[in-house]
Amino acid sequence: MKWIVAIIQPHRLDAVKQALTDVEVFRLTVADVQGYGRQKGHTEYFRGQTMQVNLLRKVRLDIAVNDNFVQPTINAILKGARSGPGGKGQIGDGKVFVLPLDNVTRISDGVQGSEAI
Image (tube, rainbow, N blue to C red; front, side, top):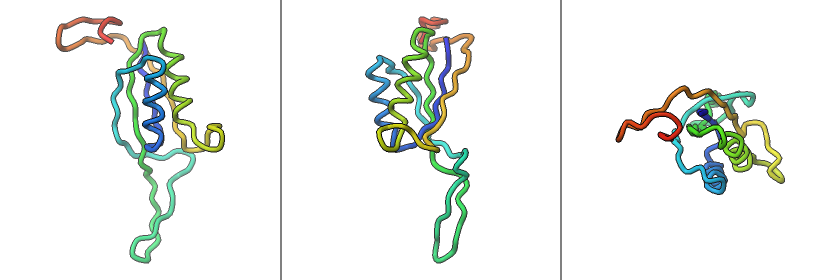
């Protein structure tokens, strides 16, 4: 079992959800987060004053999958999250992290392991 964490652009969320649905991944958690990577923020103007905005709005997806769904899930996220001409991707599109998942317990009935996912 793996826990996949993806940080993506907010406007790409619907495309990523559709790509995940296409590969039969239906369970995910979505959270609004803030952060920055290589783009290091941007400059805005407020009431005539220049302001450096260091934290950019992003969306975090948390997805627990069984081992046979890891690569299809990653591919779906890449397909849906890439922006730019031809979907080739740009700086700021996000990252995908894959972490080991030792155990999962479904609260409602106590089922554990890969069946709980």
